Image (tube, rainbow, N blue to C red; front, side, top):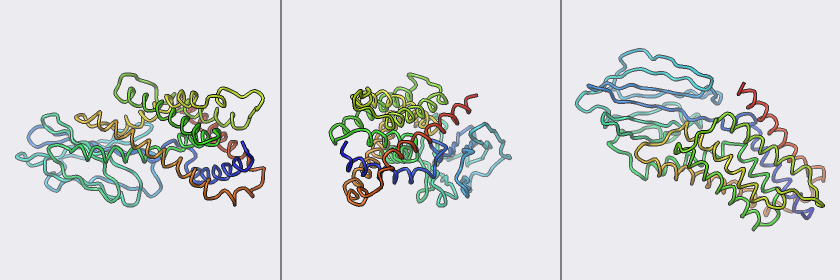
Length: 337
């Protein structure tokens, strides 16, 4: 690779790493909350409010239930290693039930947490949406429109990929590794195809995988890419350098399982599963393409200034990626035992 191009990309990678370093430990720090309301008999409904133990500092969100549906008991607390769930019962008007009532979440303006809302009606139909800052109120309809499902799950996919530094660092490593626009497009496309396949088959329940092990392997894939970037051998190029698209396809299958695990936490609307899955995948691709576009645009705009950067910066990005990957491997392996 010409030294000028390598130096430019090195500077851009350093810039991208600077943006990612505030989130070094967890893969996806802003896990969505879940507000589920299940209709029972005679206007009764069970409320379940689930939040992640991992929250940004100062994040204090709480559900706001309809005034016409008072609580009948105190919340019961259910805890596990990752989340806290409160469960209680409310009484809505028997004639109308939940339809036409409003659900809201207070405190979203001060945080980037999304809240998945699921309402299970008496006949078993499920209506759902995603609430976030600026859109924190949901009027319960008979049925959620297709356009609402597309908008909600596309946004979730977009935010998920951009809040996952492990996946972004892998894409970043591919950009640093591959020379030329056409090979890069081919490599990123192969990665996209790979994770789209496994995201679909795992999310639909055709294959079940241990999520903890998949997270370890995803971190290991980032580490392997970092090792390749620091041990270049022009005389005997590895398979990753000779056919980066093939390796990207294989690792894409692995990363897709991680995406599916995140989607399982969010949930899919029972009556619009294919549409929601497609929209979530589209959101991931849009986020990935936006990330690649920023790096390539920066390469074009900052070529001159970054070419004057010192030569010792050349391998520092790869070593930084490697250090973060080692941390993730150790942290996630320890979490299994």
